[in-house]
Image 1 (spheres, rainbow, N blue to C red):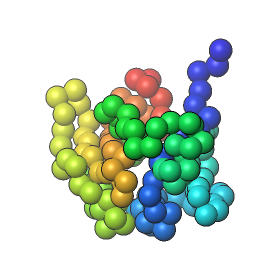
Image 2: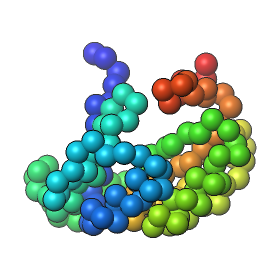
Image 3: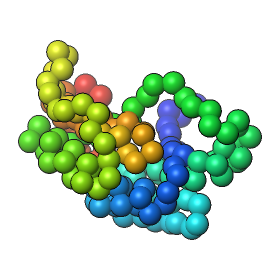
Image 4: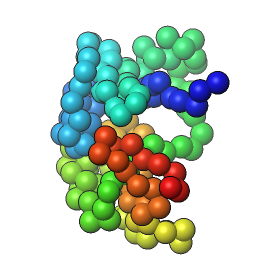
Length: 140
């Protein structure tokens, strides 16, 4: 079986607030939206943000159930790009979870939560090169 992720969909509470965070904070362009969902075409998959109650209904999942700890990551090509992006995300409605610093395993990273609390690691890892299309390769 092919190793791939086709889509990641996050439950959200407010479409306008979510659009501001992702479109203004990250600078991403939507490819589809309606009154319940917004999709962004990424490099090889789709990121969806779906009103949480509708997503829970779609999954037949108990309302308000939460997954265990996780984070999504957005890697940048240069260490100097980490903090300005984090600042922009906070200005667009995000919450700073951890200031950027250098972890013991190398690189430079910090964490920002989107308006619904989804954690994003904003990172530069010199061992993970990023190509011109934004694809990251593990330890190449």
